[in-house]
Amino acid sequence: MPIERAGVVRSKSRIEVLRTGISTANRPCLSPVENPLPLDQILLGDCVEKLNRLPAESVDLVFADPPYNLQLEGKILRPDQSQVDAVDDAWDKFDSFADYDRFTHEWLAAVRRVMKRHATLFVIGSYHNIFRVGTILQDQGFWILNDIIWRKSNPMPNFRGRRFTNAHETMIWAAKSADVKNYTFHYDALKAGNEDHQVRSDWLLPICSGGERLKNEAGRKTHPTQKPENLLSRILLATTNPGDVVLDPFFGTGTTGAVAKKLGRSFIGIEREAGYAAAAKARIAAIDPLPSEAIASFPNKRTEPRIPFMTLIESGLLAAGETLTDEKGRHEAVVRADGTLAVGPIIGSIHKIGALVQGLPACNGWTFWHFQRDGQKHPLDRLRIQLRESGKEPV
Image (cartoon, rainbow, N blue to C red; front, side):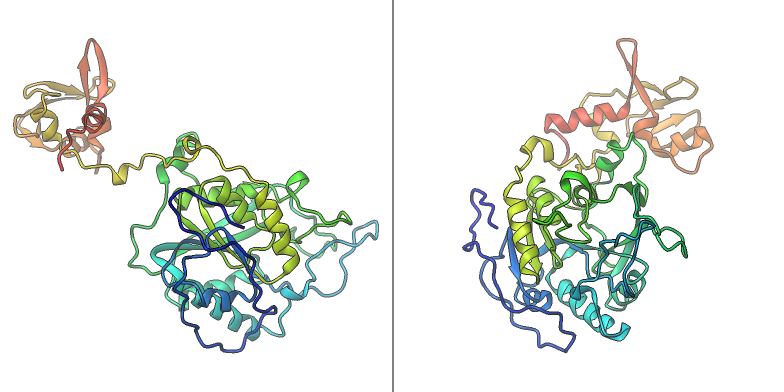
């Protein structure tokens, strides 16, 4: 469905229908259309054929939740003999592992073509498929950045009592190649939102339930593997920016699209089942985007202009001959006119001298060394921030 934004040309919104069914036969790669990207639309049909019609290098992030090929045999019953609403749909069934591998090769190759050079890919799966997907992904040249464990706080019990309770799913996060270095990753924002601790690769989140779970007229789950919005929110906030294009080639009931709209991203969804596509369209229509101030990108220290320590002296914010100390006043160093520090006869940068006095291999001198104003100590970084905000930083 369309989400109009000022200054952006959109093609007429529609849900296209090409074909249904998963084919693992080799297909010729169709020439990409020259029309604008079908932003904020759901394309109904075979994912590989639809992907082959998109322009090359046109999306910023891919989230893929492919069929898991669960290989379920027979019904699963609870202790009270009621039947579990498990995944037994035709779209999750393949004739063999080789058949599944061919399908995986095809959609990964098609996804790789439409990813921008610095785009990244998330693939989620279970023990049934994620190791096969990971092997194929590496064979195609993708470079794995992390594997992330989604640990479910409320997993479905193991009713047969013959295995451990399956309480997690695995996500592979990958770049197009090992050469890609400047992919989007909002490390500082994630850390700030996590009590100033690094965000780990194991995420404890509940499965989709309650009011978020879409249900049909009979009260049954619309989609058996609907992912929680909190999972997609964390992914999009960590690895995209407002205005980025997020592709989901297995769109289902539209969790990716709903979260993208809420967070000010554009989406392209591909879904082969008309019922799921209709449910996704209605769901996304009801989403209100967050205000711009709530989703503005967190300041990224890695992209901020570099400020040499010498610039603080040249700008008059710090004086040659001034004494710096650490926060607790245990160490002292003298600011030299050439932008170095001196501790007795030893001279070096703010980082090297900071490391030396602590007996450490490395040190961030901007946060270790403090200057004094009006009887209060402040880290050197405050002067650096002040200089950036003044607009007088060096080009």
